[in-house]
Length: 148
Image (tube, rainbow, N blue to C red):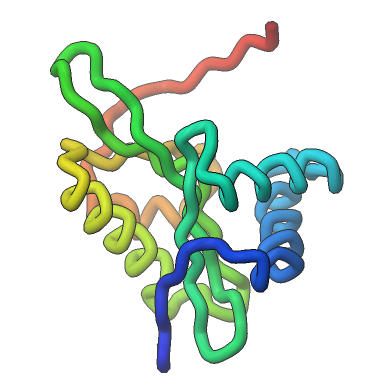
């Protein structure tokens, strides 16, 4: 990775983020429409809903992103970080960018006094799991979802 830098979201990156966000959602089997993407982008710009983002920029290209937010740890009485979304562009996979994004979020978490960074992945995301198994501890938690 040459000249990689991390930036917060700014209007300049709107269309590039939208393109990558769409590919991220499609990879998860949950494609998003323009209205959903516009809502999430507005949250990221305004830093409402507690969610924010870091963009990985290489040269003039968006190479990846991470969306994250604080959450209370009720069993420990402290605050931690939830890494909601992690995306690395296909052209940047295998370069260490995924790890760099996670480490950048961990740095932010430490600066804010958050006690840990947590995330989930799909059971079939074995490539990402190889990275996660090297840098983090598998919490052995299952995620359930029920629509309301």
